[in-house]
Image 1 (spheres, rainbow, N blue to C red):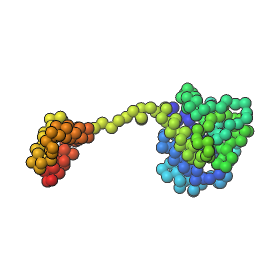
Image 2: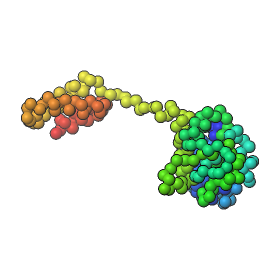
Image 3: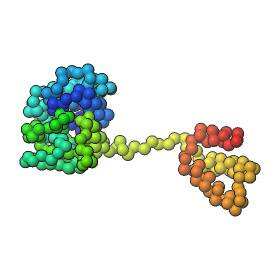
Image 4: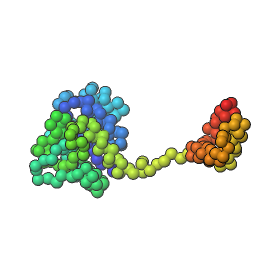
Length: 234
């Protein structure tokens, strides 16, 4: 699913943004990042430097002279725009965009972005099927190109790979209730000798609170041994 989605940067101006974008793609398992008429020569050392561990993505990046050739491998193309366009093309909300991606996940999908300063032109957008916009603060709607890409990568990844968000680290070697009760009794006896339970009528409540504290921490056997040693020394 993920590998049927490619990202297309049209006339990107800063090679550093290309590198950051590649890094964002790799964070979420995407592999395809292509360029249309980048401002600086390609390959580019600045892009390689900012890509960090995503150089493999840049090594496969293809450069096209025009959008028409760049989108030939896709079935559906989405165009990112920071502003609403007065053109006869369906504008999707961000949620609609994500749902459309999910609906068409078996098809080859291209997501297109324009140059940093001006964004996609109406002519560029004419090659797309849909337009979408990332919802942001209306008082400051400018988003860095690579930031836009990583936001979109995250949202698509979250929706196409839900299992990653359901995994919970399993606690291992958690002490038994018997060991916990023995430990709390040990602590109680030491506190009793030190005259901690004062006034006496509050002892029961204090012990309940102690059991709650140690009970919800889900101590391991190693942690219990450390705590027992600490209390012994004190």
